[in-house]
Length: 199
Image (cartoon, rainbow, N blue to C red; front, side, top):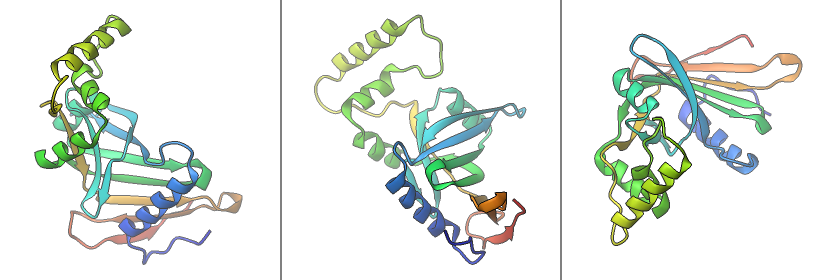
């Protein structure tokens, strides 16, 4: 395993690590922990799936009325953590988030399996339900409503793009002398500064 290099481009390095994870991780190499917080700083964290990535940032989708959706709309800053146990690597990302354009959300929504699109209408994500039958009933109702033709994207369902201002790469090394390097910048478009951290 080669050492991390301060001269690396963080997006290119992430892409190569994600590609390698796709070849080694058994399930969901694009899984990431997403940390959000309320406006008064109370944090929460959960696993979500990365659905898009390029030099503009990291994209994921959700019900905007869910806890994470509400927190991101109220406090548009977040942190991500990718942990690839089989590769003994981790990437941490921090930055502001913003909703993706409607056309981008529509394109991704329409690429999902039909049952997943129905599920986006049926699930009142993060809210209490009386029992599993309540969800199954809602699925049946929306499946009947959209039995013919296209299933439109719900107005409460969209994506967020995190524009990173800090990306930290960590990889395991012998004797706990791990390799850590941080790329940071004040805003999108600015040059990255780099620093190596003690393990």
